[in-house]
Image (cartoon, rainbow, N blue to C red; front, side, top):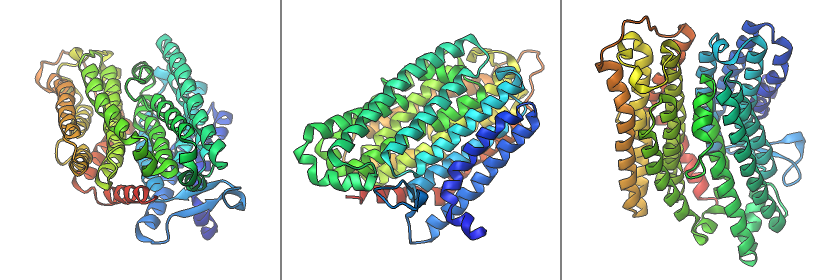
Length: 498
């Protein structure tokens, strides 16, 4: 029994949240049971993923290939458990469990009654399962299927908010996400037309042989993939759906959307760029230069946009646009240090931004205020919430001893190795701008006079979620060890595929 579970663990990790999601509607009237089931499947996923990570870190016979239905590639569908997949799985588990804990007993005022809460959790688990599938799939068509499941789940999570603005934000998100999906599908179609394969490794081998015979088709595939996933991952200037969607969604949805959903699309793009096209074709078509350029523009434009926002959640939403730029910049450096830094920063940002959104939501719920200027003295009234916001702000800015610093430091080293001075300047400038739009919130929270109102930290599950996420930010900053090792291995594996 244990051997069978171990052998089939990759597919169990994907199927478990999907199975529970389909069971939840039948239990909609039993709210406590629904919440317990969600937390249970999250805990089981974390344990299973940690076991997979131990195998990847300590065994040499990786990647582990799981063939769905026993059919070998290229006829069957493969799940590939390597350093990159395990790295993203760990990120998913570390973020989604505390977010689910924060949602426990805290959704009624934002979502509604028991049935609406059950539907929220259905969408939540569908998104988690789709993200796990994105981490492991080695098949282009299944990338598209999982992207669609994630996209529809995200739209549903945004619309779950019991507010008129949520419907408008969802509609905008759905239209643009559909456009992105069409472009991704078109890119996959171009690859299939010229290679005859959907398996990433087989398509990559064929592309390396015949790409010079079809240069325009390859360029079209590149273009469709970059723009399609750029829309979905809110890369500037394709980000117009994100501020409204992330700021009006229910609090746990804002955290999971900004922390994980955007990262899932980025991971899919990374796998397509490196596992299918490879760095040789990226250099031939100057795609790496495009990635660095759009990354730098996103860092500056997103940060300046965040500075102008008066509402806290909208400021955090625009901040996501800037932080996505760091990841794209690292993807274009084409060296191990830069790529590992981008991956580590991806995981760090997932944890940090989830903490920021959850702590901001706790402040907004307690005060009933949306604007930053109305949060005077909240640090003394809500010490745990304000401390979590402070820790995550320091991490996002890149202060040493916090996780964001490790990612940015590796990105700086990768930029130095590439011989580019401009990315170094932009990374540093982005950090300064990040401090400029986050530190005033901390100043207002701690150093301005608090009104005579009874603001309190949220309930125990919410406080525990904030403490767990804050602890991860500190641990990854002080002892990045295994996580950084996985990121370095993933980067090395991606760069030696050609």
